[in-house]
Image (cartoon, rainbow, N blue to C red; front, side, top):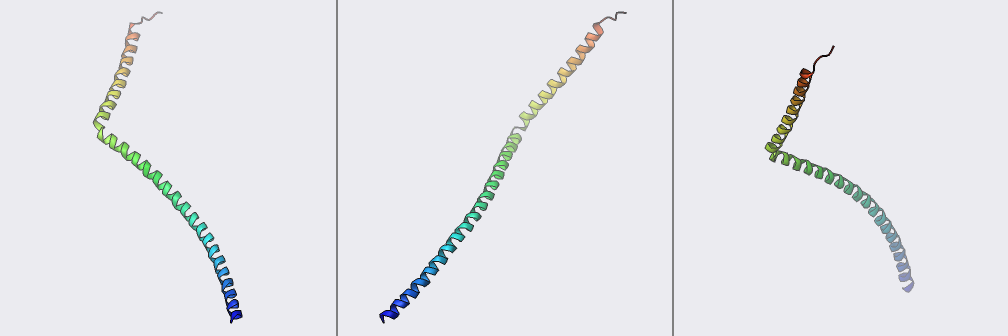
Length: 105
């Protein structure tokens, strides 16, 4: 009975050895593919967060413009008026200078 028990234990240990090797190989391959998958998922989450941040900035800028549209309009109108009146002043100064000169023959 001792010999049959020893042979049975030996066969059982060989089976457990192969099962352990196969389980270890499976764990290594599975963790490798899980790591690759998590790498790609993390990369796409990173890209999505970048786009979300850009949209938040653009939305914040839009809210700023919408909230201050009157003030921005007054500033733009003042800048336009300044440019328009300084340009007219230069044209009038040229005309006055030209009219004040005498023609010498």
